[in-house]
Image 1 (cartoon, helix red, strand yellow):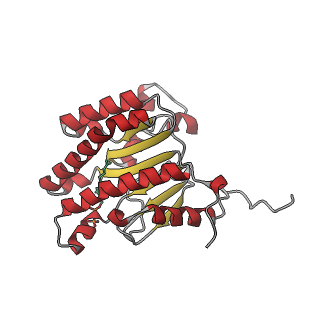
Image 2 (spheres, rainbow, N blue to C red; image 1 turned 60 degrees about the vertical axis):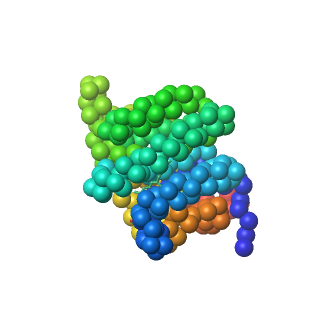
Image 3 (cartoon, rainbow, N blue to C red; image 1 turned 60 degrees about the horizontal axis):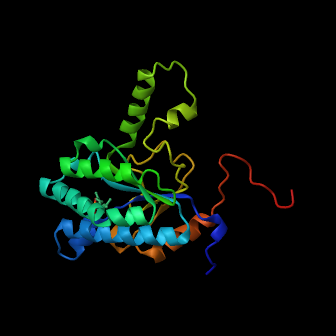
Length: 238
Ligand code: FPP
């Protein structure tokens, strides 16, 4: 098996973390046990990504549709996120990690909302690594929000750049690679505008089972692809 090419590491990787519920069900555990194991996977993947030289990560943690789940599960997911952020707040600062969010976080439980405001504010000048968490996020709503912001500014004519600068990801690069676990092969309203040229990678592995080994495999697969961005392949020696 060929080695990972250190000169072709994706800059920004997005994760659609799917399969927590099925992972738990398979073990006859409550769904929340799957989300708890999902947080462990997120920690594992974050440090592995950093070791590999990836600079930006986006995680789909809670969609606008996820409110339709049982209250117990919704509250449980928010508690897990809050616990993870509280426990790692100092570490993010020490390790110069920027935490950003995308989605309408004002609708989240007050304590989590305030924690997110505090953590994003205190880490915004960090330079080493970005972890972007999608919470109460939907890409179509993000696009409409960007349009409304431009209308509020009185814009009559806009460029792509104007538009991109009103998205939650204004300060980030577009994702190079989107990974979705658990066998589903769709984007489910995740970073639709930003993913225009992203490579998509789908694996049957449930998110709680996703390890560095799986990430390396996804990156090798990404490196084997021919990213042309609509252009014609460059011939060698030309
Ligand atoms: C999808 O699996 C997973 C979610 C909706 C929640 C993911 C959230 C976490 C892992 C917590 C994130 C933590 C931080 C710190 C950001 P599913 O429940 O839809 O699985 P299923 O399709 O098998 O039912």
